[in-house]
Image 1 (tube, rainbow, N blue to C red):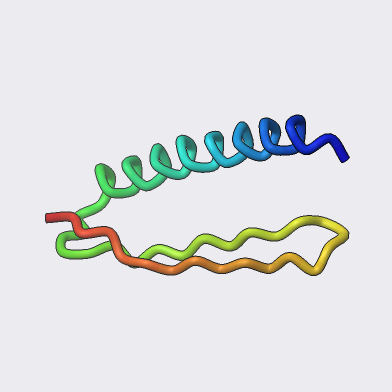
Image 2: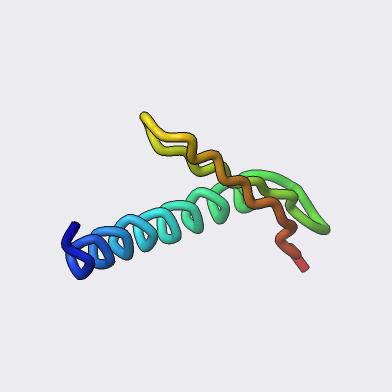
Length: 62
């Protein structure tokens, strides 16, 4: 495995996940009358592996 290539590819993927996730959250917040906090959950899996990573949290909508 080429460590440098792996790290760059991983960072590109994570950047895309972050940007597109933020856009999706902003869209749902604009479209709805949510108020308070938005409970969110992100699930990461990788086809053909046992990877099943879950992150849960709250976003304060002010």
